[in-house]
Image (cartoon, rainbow, N blue to C red; front, side, top):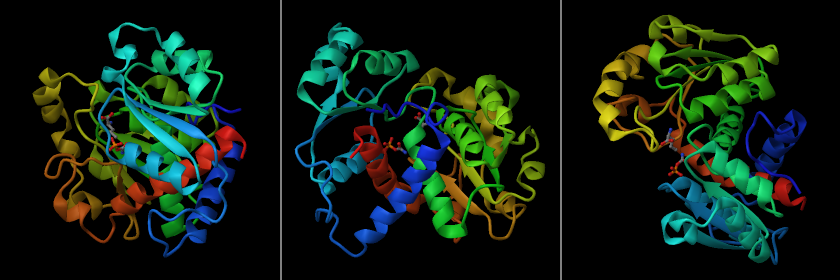
Length: 308
Ligand code: CP
Ligand code: NVA
């Protein structure tokens, strides 16, 4: 049994195998209706709990669909409607859910909640996003990059904007998949030093460059995310917008990257804020491929967790 809590705590060889498995599973069901079952049904007889303490479109739909395609079943649970949201401890919730289901995917706020769930569950736990990281997203992003441009190892990725949870998982991925990353954003919103340190310790070049134009020079991939995450206070909205406005990904910025550079965004996007519609809908954007690949990448993660 394996928990999938972070890219930094999962073996790099296993991560690579999961990406390769995801691509093979995607190819195997090419052209089929979305709801059709896969030929192989490794999750037959398995029940998966999908617990959400924050909103979700992609994570919810892609996990639900992926489990079903592989023959399993799901229960989608809203944290606020569970006893979890009314004082029952995480540890007790983990023990109880482990008596009913074969795997727990949880999207929550504090990293400590995820850790406590994993510590007390007797079934695998998957991180579906916390305030600190979003590993499933970056599995889909690595898969997407490689589908379009081949191996990501040795490439230059530029993260523009907030050094948030998605940025953290990109830094972990830099270490595990062997690419370099330049962060460009205001110093107030730098990624945590631990995430930068993780990638550097693995020998990757991680650069902090305040000038976005200089940052994207030579970039193979430009990535951004919302300026205000689900865990950020709405009262900080204006301050964040003021800090992050110079880091908008627009056509002028993309023009400074390599001509074959791709653009990614985990979505949901705020058009006209962190990215313009021209870039989102332009030829370098692969944002909807990323969204689709959440499905395929997570199917590989589910199989790895269950060892099936
Ligand atoms: N990218 C992502 O995780 O989207 P949702 O919040 O819609 O799940
Ligand atoms: N950084 C964003 C990602 C959403 C998928 C958030 O945490 O709200």
